[in-house]
Structures are given as structure tokens and as C-alpha cells.
Length: 342
Image (tube, rainbow, N blue to C red):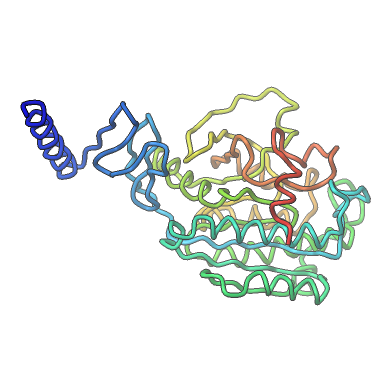
């Protein structure tokens, strides 16, 4: 009986202590089972709360001062062109439409995987398409039907944007028709992005995403932007060419991934409306004159703004196996490919 009384007293004081911690906004961790009594959660569970706080064990709590209000995802599709500047086959040697459909499917799956959390922000998915066949567009529509987020499919207004493109590039060569459509699509995407409410994710149609990609990107953006007090640019891929040279890099903690600073990306990245408007002319310059490398204007922006990518990748560029701008290392490509089978 005495033992029972001691246990009862212990439980009473424990409950009282937990209530006091809740009252004053403190958290405690039971090292015996890694539970957090104040939150009533296990330490192995997702502890962060979008727009409110970021919690990473054992680093503690960060009160979010830069909450994400909305996310516009803009996918540029052209299922009729296999490779923009090459004739090589992609990994798994499928028709281009398969990569476009798997890109869209992987993003939808990633959104729905974190549906309860992502419902707290406004999400819209926009496809800007050029020359994809009617049956492919119908499959796009079928994938987007009855989703909890808004969506829209637009045609590329190529006749409007191609007039702005210089016909000879930085190498003195004539700009190809495929590159003209690509540059026009990026331009149209940027013009939509600068009028969005908050974050914008520009995506090429050959990036297949992991299931946790969108949740990690949003929670990591809030955490890192809050810590540093600045807007960010995020690339979801971990490009192999970044490992071909020795460069200094800062490492930061996101939600469930490490993130490192980088100086270069391709044309798939997430950023804020503020960054787009601040550097709009520089972004658009990549769409009006073909630089070498193509993304050079973006890289100039990264000298002034913080650009980061995850380790390991959250999305993989499914291009040729030998491309230094393609497959991220240490990823199970076959598993990711099969997981997004339609």
C-alpha cells in the first residue's frame, strides 16, 4: 500500500509539473522512452507544426516568425520532346510522356502524403504545357481531378514570349526551336510566379519527387528562413556535378534532412514572391538570351541570395545516366520510378 501511495503521489506531481510546463510554454523529454509529455507525442513522431514552431531533437523548439502562407507549384510540361539539347536516351528508356506523368503524380502524392499539415496553407498547382498530345493532357486532368488543392492547365503562349528571345546565343549559335519553347515557358512561369501570394515552386517535367518532398521543403523553409531572417531559394535535387569540385558549404538542419548552401542549380527551384520580384529582370534575362551556361543569370542571383539543396535529394532529375546534371547520388532510382507507376 505504501508503494502504491508513493506511485500515486509521483503521478500527481508529474501531472502537475506537465500542466505547469504547458502553462509557461516549456517542453520536457522523458529520456526513458523519448516521449514529450507536454505535447503528448513520441520523439520519433513529427513534432513540428507548420506556421507555428519547428522542433528537431535534440535542438529544441524554434518559434516560427516566417510562416508559409501559400505555395504555387508551376510545372512546365512538353511531353513531345524527349531531351532539350541531346538525342540520348533517359534512364529506363521510356517515352518522354512517362516522365512528365510521373513528375506530376509524384508531386500530387507528396502533397497528399502530408495533406493534414499542408491544408493549413493554400496550395495551387499550375501546368503550363506546350505541344503535349491530347491523351497526355487528359491524363493530367485525371490525376488532378478531385484533389483538395486548386489546379489549372494552361497552354504556353509561345507566340507572345518568343518575340522577346534573341535568335543567336552567347556561343554565337542559333537558338533551337526546343530551346525557344523552353525559354518561353520559363518566362511565362516567372510572370505567373511574381503575382502569387508567397512561395512558388518552378518544376521541370522530369523531376520525380520523394513522398516527403513537399512537407520537408515547406517546414525547412520556415525553420531556416526564421533562423537566418531572410528569404531562400531551394533546389530539391542533389546534382552530381556539385561533387566534382571542392567548394565550401554551410550545413543547416531542416525538418528531416540536412541542407547545404550551393551556388548553382538548373531550372527547378522553390523561392518566394519577394525574391522573384526583387530579381525579376535578372531571372527573365535567362528567358530572353541563351547564356552559357543557360542558368548563368540564376547563378548570379545566388551570389546575393541564399540557395540551398537537401542531402540526400528530395527530387531526382531523371535524365541520362551519364549526365552530371542528372541523377542524384545515393538514391534508389528504380524504387522511386516504380512507386510512381500510373
